[in-house]
Image (cartoon, rainbow, N blue to C red; front, side, top):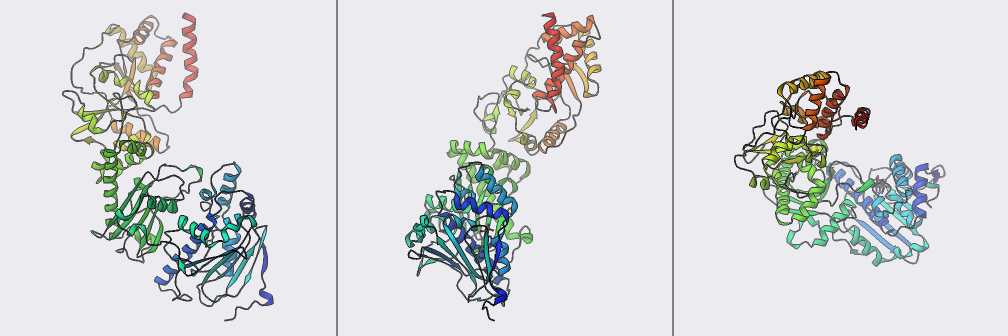
Length: 622
Ligand code: ADP
């Protein structure tokens, strides 16, 4: 079939979409220090196209040139000041050239423009590519770019695309024999350095060394290509892992941890997994759920898989390669593949082991891990029944003992007092609030350590953390807490009768909000607290809050402390005047205070008018 351009098929001028124009303008006029990454972007596009054609041919579709080598060629010409990148990938039809190189997702463009406008000094390498503007990065170094491409679909003619990076480009039919794409960059004067063979080789080594297809410059292959994860771990240098991490994730920080697993039994499995240094990489991180690439027999099967690890490990990034996977594994069938289930089990087990080793051998590094990712481990405790024992050892808590020091369940257990058979915890909205919790009174009096749980995730974690090595976990706001050891009760400052009247008044004032008002047998320094006889209920309530739902307050029992000065004073005021408005306001405030400390108050601002009233009353008598 002829690919001669005919008059009615001459190249046509097109105008870039407004978003593209904006992006191009920024790229062409910004002084990026790391312009070299344009090459990484072009090689990555070529490699994607090669992956796609490899996949097409495996599934037996008809393709042009089925025998041609799958590879990338990069040539620099210093005299012409050009760089040419050629591949034997899928190629593009004329329509595809216009579609893919003339437009850009509006949301990506907007994010990109925003990012650069804010004067954010993020390096180009960090932002390009993450916004799907990879190809356009050529305009950082080139003032003219020509693309000639021929699709793998038999019987489709070749096509070209050319632009000087302004507002427009031309596209039309072209001549090209074989399948694939050639991108020619006419370099700007100040980018002449890239028209050099050794410079090209240097850039390829730095950014594209592990691309799965050979990259040739002249006759020579310049990338290492042998998949790092298929090499023996002891032969791989620390720097090579860092390089792989950078190439996979575009993260500028070094990873916190890497795990290299290479084994044949029980499955053929070669994998390198990374724990990043930070949970969030700022605004520009691509939000994806699965950060694992899945290979089989050197073919990239799936790019973003989340089924390879339990959901709580979704912060892990890396590569998994197994020969045992069927090549036709699709996104839908991936989950149900028994091989995949075995891989998942093996990887999860290794991650647990590795994290436990880190905790034992490098406590400082583990502390950094916990700070960023502890919340995911808590989620794992709630959701991974099989892995729970391993995960429990990783948990770290603030307690009433340590200042800022974090404590393991094992350390807690080693310090329990005589007769103690439970692990006590208090739930609160913050550490400060937890430390002032009235529920602590009886435990402090007995010298019993209490875990301070202040994370919203803690409520969820508790659904999976019922006991630890024979010790049950117990919320200290429970109504009938059976504590070991005896302490002398604090002396009441009011008569039983006086107290009964106050309690009656409190029940009337608070109405449905409380089940009952009664004298506390355990409070010492605090005037009041709310206790429950239904611990599941309030943990569920916390989970509701975690999910951002408005939670219904289930009524609890209010305990007042007859040995406390405030309670005694209120009791005497009731005796003098049953309808004293100060008493009603004070009782309501005591109730709200209790909710507030536990982080269960839905709307603290509503307390302000009442507090003002109480202040006014105090100021008048003072
Ligand atoms: P991204 O690669 O992030 O999708 P790009 O702007 O780099 O964004 O590329 C846009 C699209 O153009 C690609 O998704 C692909 O469909 C197509 N493309 C680019 N380069 C090639 C190539 N060498 N071979 C085939 N298709 C390509």
